[in-house]
Amino acid sequence: MNLVGCLDTPTDGRYRLAGEDVSKLGKDELADVRNRRVGFVFQGFNLLPQISAFENVEMPLLFGGVPVRERRERVAEVLGRVGLSDRMEHKPTELSGGQMQRVAIARALAMRPAVLLADEPTGNLDSTSGGDIMQLFTQLWEQGRTVVVITHDMTLARRASRIVEIHDGRIVSDSAVAA
Image (tube, rainbow, N blue to C red; front, top):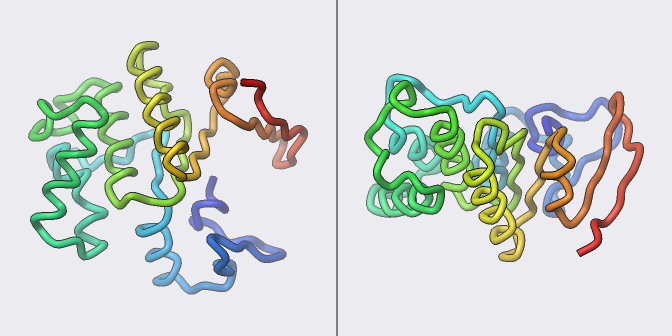
């Protein structure tokens, strides 16, 4: 996840993202790539506890220079897509674990990234909410986005179109999932 998301750089070889060799980019250029092209859903949420769900989702849009009106519209849209329209002004400490996970997912979607990286995105959700989030990921994939879900849950993995298994840093299998 760290290599694909440009959080780490490869020690050898090249890494091309959307045709661009990102393995040689500097810190500022990599930060721009992460903000504009990659959405992250971290297992630990990484929400700022002192600000509202709305402000947490708005953060990447601020850094991306999105105008105020468009920022507000996008934040409302993605919070609505994850079922949190009624919790926008709540701080993370006022939300359940599942709601915090959905705020993290909304934040990852706010910049409309081409690539979405999700580390155990349903780990803190009940089965119904988890199913809703996976349906959202399926819709994003159908719209042409790349969605990478990192999980230990094979039931969740089987909902994907492709499963790549990694053991000790090496790919041990790569297969399409039967529809």
